[in-house]
Length: 449
Image: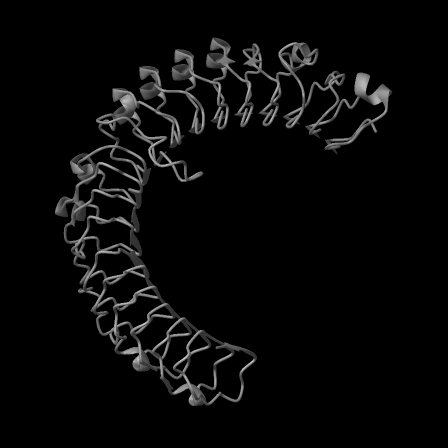
């Protein structure tokens, strides 16, 4: 097969002759995951992609001397090579564009030779938990666009990071990372992510206090989760920001009204910020489409949302909210979730939500009910759970799915028999509901006392 260009033999055990001396002079792509340790990639002068992931190769592997002379190699994938402790000299692989070392859990060293890779665009060392340093030679990677060091033991990135003018994505994840002051020189940086990979044990991972430096104004995606900053004043300058995560910021006390300068922000997530006591008006976030405010136990006042005409998704969960205000005028809202608001005594009239298709109200035991549902004809899915004070529900005409669970005082469902579009009906643990009339076209029905 002298003209073969792609060979994929993942997890295969091949005859000894092929293992020792493959000869495919036109081969461009070779994928051999869990390759035998005896395999050496010889006579592959045109090879562009080499994937040996999940293999037992080490720094003593005989194949290294052949890889380092493969001048056409563009992608080298060694992810999950758990016995590899150091990356050997790759300075001759001048056309290498992607170097993937993800989950090489024994890797401790990436040599300075990496600085010769002027074409490298992706460097991924995510999950290399024994890796503690990156060489200052990374500052020479003039084409690098993506750097991923999540779940490593790297505590500080070198100041040379600021020289990476092409860098657009930086994933620092669950390192106790200190970003260098040169970070603000990354003029093309669009994504800076500090989490959202796996939720760690509380307090185990975080960006150290006061180590969120001045950030480049080019940022569009910022995940500052687990950061210990108390103030968000530095974020008001990020006027191009489109996505902002502020989850598990344990020292954050306030989200000031200056956040309204982020007029291009489309998604804002504020979860598990236990000391957060105030969120200023969010009315200036005119591009906001997705908002989550959940499990912020010190937050007693709901922020003003009036005027957020593009908001499509709203999720609220807070066990100290007594009343929700400012949901009026959210004309574009499509999904509303209110859950675990144990002391919520009033849910505002929802008749303004003319485009809502899904509403979930879960575990709001003090709430006596909800007004305006019957007029929401676009509503297709309604889920009500553990709202024990509810006695009556009025339904809109176009509803397709209705789940009612643990409403022990519910005695009436008004309009159920006229729901010609209803396909799915679940009613469980509603002991006060004695009689219902079912619609004719129902497909799924489950009723448990």
